[in-house]
Length: 447
Image (tube, rainbow, N blue to C red; front, side, top):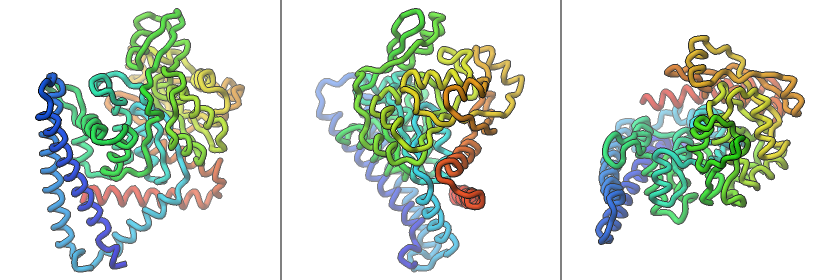
């Protein structure tokens, strides 16, 4: 027990040391590249200068926070081998609870996937997030074009959702520059871009960033191939680029007929395939149907493995329709689109929301040709998919979103009840312990 008494503050100190090392790496890498190149364009000049500044700032943060952790070790007597046994008990208990949780694979992209992951991490550490890499817009698109790397945006959001990191660090990584050549670019994207520059490949870069931020579970790109998303509209036109598809569908007043990827034979990441094979449950979504969820299933080995998997397969349907993608879609239409692109057998259950949406919110969405997704159970059952209904909606800044806590609890109860055959008493006990874990983490974050 004495050996473990400094576990929590010791881990924090180790984290800041790792971050400091990363800052030094940024500075050295940027300085070497900057001074070794005779002809350098403006973008790279600002990028390398930014890395140097970011490295200095990161080093400063790691030193100051590292000193605080060291002082905390001394003030709390941890260096003298004394211990707050209740805190150590909580840490050990949390680790045991999470390790015993079901093996969950979440597939998707965008903000929907990361939102769900924020809730799921309180119930299990056996999480694998498989994330689309078809994004070509915003800061991710710029880095993809300029540096020839896979888009980091959705990956970054999922890493932060699963990270056990300090609030300041998350705020830093989500920060977007407001001026200059880096305007609208997030620091987290640049962090991952720099990590990609000092790693053998993008997959390794994601693993290193996950390690630095103490991620619960794993975040994996669906493929490391340079995947480009395309769509055929009902008018016969082909649209290239994830960000262009809904825009052109609206502009041309033509719905999406189908989507496809290039290269058609994009290779699935081996670890992603293995995760699906070993999973107790696979969750699709939530997220944009054609640009976040289905693109992952177009990687053939992913959809093939999903069909063969004995895991319970749950599709979390969107709450509202989306202009340019799913206008007038019912729940059954979402499932039909998935089956059309990936084949039947990839969805066992569909999670649908039963909470009534406020009329004022509905009216606001109608202005953008969006409305609540209708649930016609007969049409869904005809597709050999079972409906599971729950109340997991929240409204933030006038936008309808999935509530991460409610959704995670709802999904975990389904997984344990339908797949793992837990009796009711065990399920109640598990959720009680999970709630205690969440409360403990909130107390520690305030400390």
